[in-house]
Image (tube, each protein chain N blue to C red):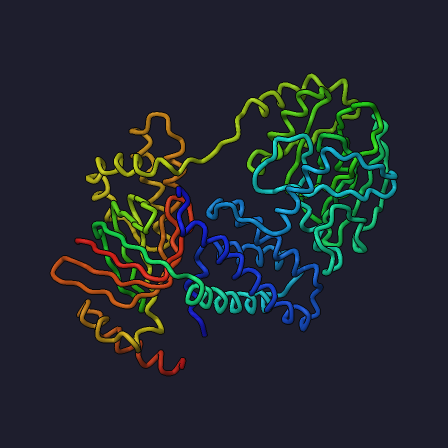
Length: 363
Length: 132
């Protein structure tokens, strides 16, 4: 079995901790008179950051699993929607960009704003906290709805067929609707009454007019790390299309970067050759804050030897830290023995946990 | 009081960042954020103690060791972490085992390890007893 027990454990443990914390602080929030929605927003922010860090593999939530299933269903199903009531919410997997036809952002905020008892239903009506405050029709004739969510962020709900167009607010509460100057939609048959889409502010996708390029660009851009954040005024999309296309061509030609950690073994072997250079770094401050400086200075040393591997440099960006408690730390001459317990490790960018760790080192 | 040392982990940092964002938008008070972090400390300590049951071995060369403010910090080079199924190699790793509250239970090991820190250790005992 290739997968280790540890990487199977970590997501569950983290998930447990998160649920515990959120449930315990719910009372605190209520005591302070803070709305439940803020609690949900905290949870969402927390989850998103964890996923963005890529420190935890396959950090799933029950919602996301359901979303993925629904997403695939929604692609095939065509639902008639009235323009004023987009009921279908496509919930995507926020972690991995699904290079499929339907590209939707993570509407966790959207979900959480609904009643707590609401499960991840495939069809969600606009929750009470979200009210369409503005509807406008794009030059293409599509009816868009500007929705102001309870948390201040504004979303655009638009009936979409196979593409996702998002022009969300970058700063919740501070941006007004006019910023969203144009929403470009792939016109496949004009007004389509497909599923509505809720977009989260964090991912902005700008697509051109050409459908094909849109598909690629949006598919690429949906990936969290590649959201191209351009919002360009385009009163006439078709006139501006040529300008967009080169940009999107660039975006679409960038393959999704997948960080390979498999090469850890190779990495360390390269490092062993540079032990002498590490000695020079001893003088550097090895405090926690200074540790980052040490990393920065190591990179130029490493980058000279690296031929083409950007991944190694990215690995070096993470300072491998183990935070734990100890049972015993023993030294005999220059031989140290460590008996550690209850630790969380971040090695090569990934998180691990242990209940016991025993180590040897020579000074 | 649970150890706060797990705040500087992926999980803890992401929580702190999220709380900071909410504070900046004034959706919660700093006081409330602190309460959340305290709750997080409890939850993570409990989870690690009860839910995690695995063992890791590691071997490497010790670059530096430090014992300051009742906290050990080790920097190791060329370390191999072994679990039953995994092998993870890193070139440099910092280990920060917290001994703040555990000094009372592990005094002898602590003092034997590094003599010069004995005085600091004795000072810390009074601090701990007042905390308890």
